[in-house]
Image 1 (cartoon, rainbow, N blue to C red):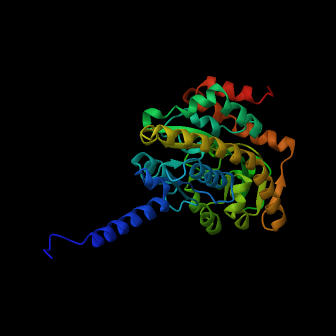
Image 2 (tube, protein in one colour):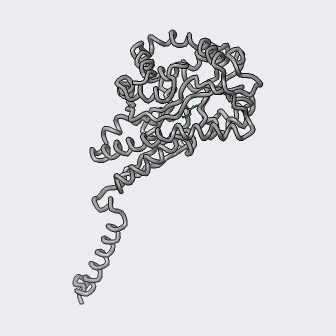
Image 3 (cartoon, rainbow, N blue to C red):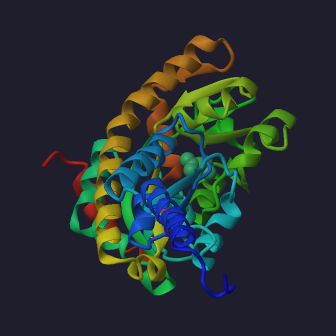
Length: 344
Ligand code: LMR
């Protein structure tokens, strides 16, 4: 039989094999059926999973992959695994990561207005922070960095900041004089501790535990959730319940990458972000209350309540910071924040 003529049976057999392969690949991955490969979305952050931000990121992954089945795959990298404090913003702008959620203290290279959140004793409580963020000025800040390539998608809560030290006393501002405190990369926070006569040290979050343990710094400020989840309380003697400021987050993406997404994917991600925001913000107060109790029961650092007169002394000692940064932040922003302290 000439080599060019192959038997009908042989042809049928090969076609059947090819059809079987095609069918199995169709069943294996729905997105592949439409010729799509899932968009990989990298979400990097610097805290533990069992924190408000950690839970928010995992909820975003869960909801986004359900809503956009087969179209997106969200990879969450907690605890500075992929990029730490000093690198995450640059990585976002380079497209090496797609979503991050830095503390609001870490944006002053991109806009001076967000320094508002670092003003000591500005917000009475987290409800006031939420009212400001939901209002027109808060929403304006989400879009204040688009010219720098950053688009704010949401605010996520953590909580009010407490002060801790490895020394024996931290009741009043004078107890902080001369001590070295770790701070986030924020000029307002640097001014805050200099106003106390203390010595602020800007440092990445991932380096804080060892710096406290070895005495590179004497103390730090953060939320109950961060103090517990990073075990700072194990290497401190006192956590003073000052509630003197806030650690909150802006979930940001690379504006160019976000705007280039297919419209249906962008819509689905926006809806997933809204669900994750509600979830993280619902959890924040409870996680911080739980972790305050864990610290109080652990028998390591002593949780020290602060008397009203001592609190007034802390507030007075830090007050000069406001005037110094008012022109950079904007009096309109500060007035809107103060107005948010009053119940609507
Ligand atoms: C810090 O650096 O202290 C915080 O911003 C860490 C975080 O993201 O909660």
